[in-house]
Length: 154
Image (cartoon, rainbow, N blue to C red; front, side):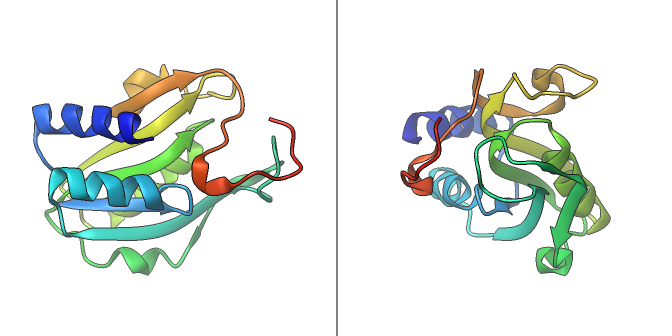
């Protein structure tokens, strides 16, 4: 995880540091905090956007991503914002979060994910064209360190 976040931080730094990071809860919280430290950013916000019915492996998707309390973003008027999530499967959650950030007034919206699961990707564009910064691309389900070990097969 440290390597993936460092890779993203290096790419962001080569571009330009954002003013605000937005973590997509829950999975994006830990990488967003790590990234905030590496980029020396203090303005870290969060929004909960879900697109799965539960946390099980290959869980059923909801019809559309669901945002919980988008007002938690606050006023982003004129801000350069980087949205951070742990994984992008279909790309819908990241796109929904991007819409919420734009609606909150951000002047620039970029996205970063630690992992793109190409087996699930359904974007019209390749992941590299739809996500600004990608730690790595994989095929198949990913279990992150903070998810713990449970009875699911991965």
